[in-house]
Amino acid sequence: MKTLIKIFLLATVSVNTMAQSITPPIQTGRNVSFFVGAFPNTIPLFMSAPLATTMSAQSKDKKVVIILSAGDAGLGGEPGSPYPYWKARQSGLENALIFYTGFQARGGGSGLYTAANVTIGGMTLERKDFGGWGDVILYTLKLPDVVGAATQTLGLGALQSGLIASMQPVTGTVAYSSTNVRDVLAGIVKLEAPSASKIVVHVTESDATLNPGDHPYMTASTKFFDSATAGATFACLNKFYYGTISNYGKPVNLPNLDLVAHADVLTHAGGVGAFSNGVTEGHRGNEWGNLGYVGKSYITRSVASFGACTF
View 1: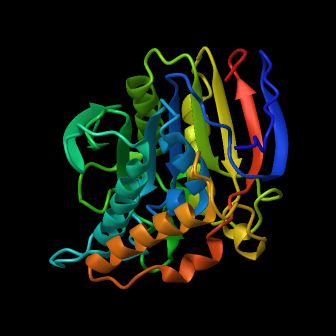
View 2 (view 1 turned 45 degrees about the vertical axis):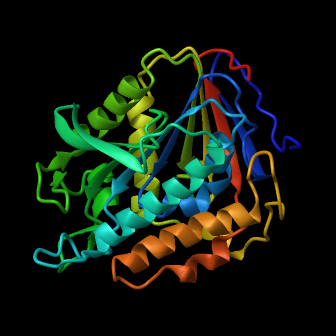
C-alpha cells in the first residue's frame, strides 16, 4: 500500500497538519496502538482505516480500544429494561471488533472474547480480550451521555470542563471525578504498554478549527486522554487526530479495495455494518443512518514526541 502520510519525527513535540491523509502506515514492530473515543461507534465510524491496518496480518501491534461514554443517548441505565440502548451499542462495538480481528488470519484463539475485572486508578473496569491472543483489548468506562434530565448537561464535556464534579456510570457503580478519569486512562496506558518502545495513539480531533461541528463529549474524550498522558515519558509516542462529524460532507477518500492493509471502503462498510447489526440484535433499531461516513477517514494532524520514532 502506498503510504499516504509522512511523519516528521523529532526528539521534541512536533505537529503536522494532514487534512487529506487516510491512515498511518503498517507498523511491523511490537508496538501498542491505542484507539480512544467517546462513544461505542466512534472507532468504527472514524478510525476504521487505522484499526483495520493494525489488524492486518502484517501488523504485530497490540490494539487497545478505550471508550469513555456508554452511548446511552441520555437514556441512562434504563433499570428493568431487557435491552438498554447502551448495551445494544456496546454489543455493536464488540461485533465490529470481532469483524476486524478476522483480518489477522491466524488460528488458535479462545473464541470471540474473554472478560475479566481489573482495578486501574482505584476503579474497577472490565477488560475484554478479543480472540484470546492478548493483543486486541477493550475497555469501556460507561459514563452517561447526559447528566441532568432538566438541563441536558452534556456529560463528558461538563466533567472535563469542571461544570460538574462527578459522573456515575450507567451501570450504577462508583462515580468518576475528572481526576478519576485521567488516572484510569493513565493506568490503562501503563498496564497495556509497560515496556513498549513505540506507542501510537488514535483520537478524535479536539481543535474546532480542524474539525468543525463536533460535540463537546467527543472532544472531551481526547482532552482527557491528552491530559492523562501529558506528564508521562515514553521512548516514543505518536498521536494521530481524526475528523469526525465534518467528514459527512467530505468526499470518499478510501480506496475501493486494499488487500494488504484493509484500509478500504468495503472494510469500513463491514465494520459499520457489524456495529449496526449488534445494535439491531439488541432490539434497539439500527444505525444505518451513519452510512454517509463510510469510505471516509481523515487525519487532521499528527503529534510526535518523546524521542525519535522510526517505523
